[in-house]
View (cartoon, rainbow, N blue to C red):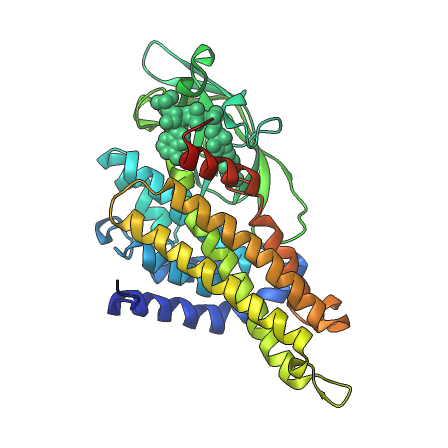
Length: 382
Ligand code: COS
């Protein structure tokens, strides 16, 4: 077993860290307060290969492995979680799905645009009445004689929905078949029949735009079907496995930022005549924070490594996401507590880390869904 990173992995980590610290961190507070979408920074990340880290260079990406993706995501998330949300959807949910299931023409057309940061991608699975229970979707795509489909319905909580050019959409094509009656499509938001609904005001990751989208007789051509008809649910689940590695990495970045700020604070802040870091009650919190952070990182790197080996990694990804997101929530909670009033104040980024961490326990499969995936895998029971 070798815990060292390759030169390439360290290089992309370094590029991500530089952009994160020089360009993203200084405007993180502004983006959090205004909710303004950070388009210039996203383009810059794209120009540096960070919107398609695992995308082969032939399609405009960096051609790196899943471990490199984890390292880069952590750096960006540590500067600002909202940026890393947009980055993770472009990388894992959009590019990864099309690379795995798309035709050559689809890869040429859609992947390069998103991987290079020229356009933004999105992923539309969730609906107002179906989140965890994804097969309960109502969005319908009805096949026409010429092989095209007409789509009608609504999707909600679409990350980057307000700005996306292309969206991977999941719609029911044969309701009698349940999970096997769902098909994946690629949508061009400039076309007739596509509409955007209300934008969600959110607790955290406020600069990552989120909205409802609507389809009214939107026509998808036959060559815009992703994978085979009826394969959509399996495509969505496989793509979410990869997405969960991204969200675990995001959680680690947020947690690391809160942890590092806490280490500085406990050395400077004095109470009862000594730095608060000298009190055992603080030391116990620091030790637990560090253990959870390292455990989350190692489990996420393991999931990325298994993915890189070309093996099924659903269980490892669920374990990583569950561990990392709960670690992020716990670590940011302790960081806020240790910072006291300063943690609660908007003068420091701690309260932002705390708000941003929460979403990692919810999206791309709640902690309850991760536990279900893990327990089904371990027991074989369902
Ligand atoms: N990779 C590939 N295929 C998968 C898969 C995965 N990770 N997970 C399930 N499948 C396949 C199954 O093998 C099965 O295929 P067959 O019909 O060929 O047998 C099919 O998908 C249905 O699987 P299953 O019966 O397990 O589906 P359930 O309805 O029981 O749902 C859960 C399983 C709950 C785990 C799933 O719906 C889920 O992950 N929900 C959360 C969705 C989510 O993350 N939403 C957030 C959206 S993005 S913000």
